[in-house]
Length: 223
Image (cartoon, rainbow, N blue to C red; front, side):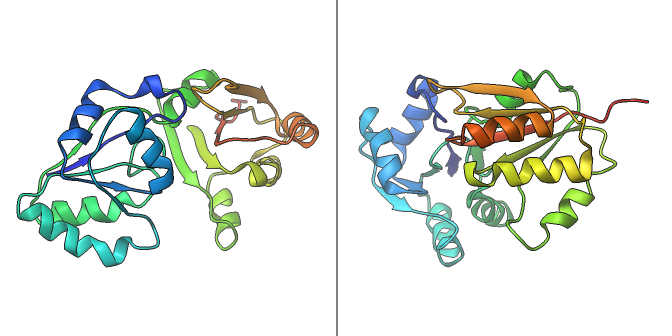
């Protein structure tokens, strides 16, 4: 079986008892970065062997991993933080396992999307998760496709591209569109900052952001 195991996005106390049990029982843990995951496994006294599995080697490894799982090997997969499969390499392996008729289980656990959405104060009954925008090619096209979107929109973004994203929101979705920028979720300096694009650009120009960032955009105001 393949287990997808969420790991804390900040506070180590967010790790579940079941996640620790599964990682200890597995025969192999696939990790995004062994340096990051090594610290986590050491903290929880997990001695299961690790193997790197990320966007640069996933294509070459999937077939072999599916074979190992089909022969009865118990493999767990974790990312550096949060739930595997959300904007990372797990998708290809999960798809291959499903196509091969193998069982896949995803444990419930930490993800940055839901805390950011709930703390934004924007509608939560319907929302659109867009993940990371393309860095260059296709970026404007994706933004233009969202002009008529009536659900809350959620992006992941890196600190050094946040100002660019806020400017694009202002240009394509409107200057008075309400935005919430969440960062460092479940860490000491957790922040959920509301405002329009101009207000947030002014703030983060003066106070350059750090940490992982989630940007929530409210639905357009009804006329």
